[in-house]
Image (cartoon, helix red, strand yellow):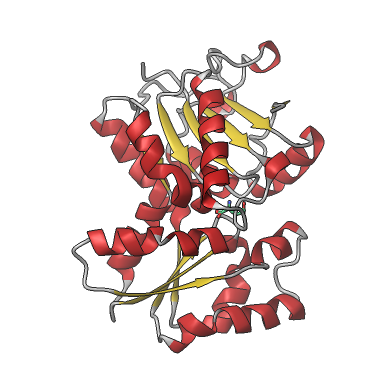
Length: 285
Ligand code: DGL
């Protein structure tokens, strides 16, 4: 059971920022990552459509015999996490609760901001998690349409992105938050610009690390943590590989699937994650 892979998915490449934290914390785990780059982005799409996509991807990952599912996309977690959690008999975790929990631990004034895609913010998912927690916090949420597009274009600190950030971050700045949750997989890459606009006193919280810690606790509690040391060179390659993986990637620790162009995924994937992006397999819907 513990030798089975962790399934992780995102609308595209952004979830690889979460995967980086997961691999760093749990280097012995095998991972199957699905990036739905062919149907990216999820942020502006209606909730029902994102839910449908999330269920379809989950079916694919179940074919790899995953032992747990990590929804490494805020927009997908906002749309689908409760449904996935109710339907699956394996543990399921998203990025929303870990990110907000980290912000609650961090804030001193109780004034917390959350920024995300239009879909994430409109879903009210962060507000719901905040309401369910006992924490006495005042939450201010702001959608940031356009941020993802700038990151995808490789522009993270131009004058244009700065001007957009000044405008979109005005609500959280006006609310005088002392902690800001980067509620979108792409926003950590804009941290410098966001930090400049918010000011040095505001702590930026990325959910990637917190999610990785939450996955470790969840696997530990469920007795699913892989305890054997990684095989192969520095854990980058294992000798057992991911069950269910296509033959060409069976000897690799991690498997990457994309619904878009494989070459683009590989090239940009290395930028988001690093050298672990070895074998990328195309998935056609
Ligand atoms: N991965 C998405 C998220 O975290 C951002 C990109 C998209 O809009 O699909 O919300």
